Length: 208
Image (tube, rainbow, N blue to C red; front, side):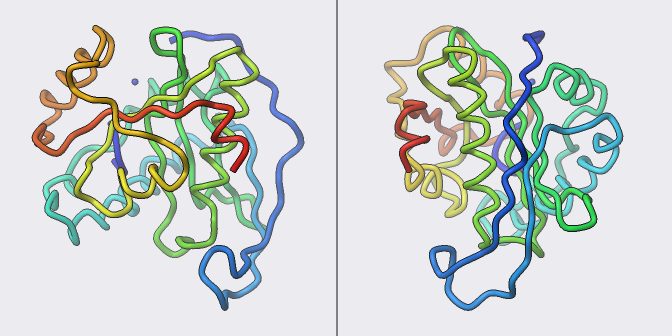
């Protein structure tokens, strides 16, 4: 798990895959590597668990090293979300996933379950582009906001999402859905003292 550990919704047909190359905006001198984002296919699903496990090893560098040993996203549930159109993959030139995002509707807004990028492809804007694709989906189904659950003391968690436009929701402002998510996080074994919910207006995410 990268930052969070789940639905039925209407399938969403995204725009044509976005192909890009890294630039100085994402860290200066980088090798030119093309990648694109598309909806996940059934054939992608078996590849995403191992990718999530690899990405999760970065938690060993954090105060939440225990998260590196968490099980990856349930494959059956992931397959259902992929069939519903709310799983996206970033793929390299050989069409192999190098990152992915999982979302679903949650209490009248979009919920970003998971965002993972293979460590070998970090700092190239892949995560930012995946978040934008989720925001495009949210706009397409008339959600005004996107919500997620993450850690506030891991540099590539809350601080990263704040740079994208998310803000921490105060604990006193949690609704029933947020409190239920917090309980799920606790049941999964996460330390709640640094677990936060974050929200961003979809329009703001798409303006960045």
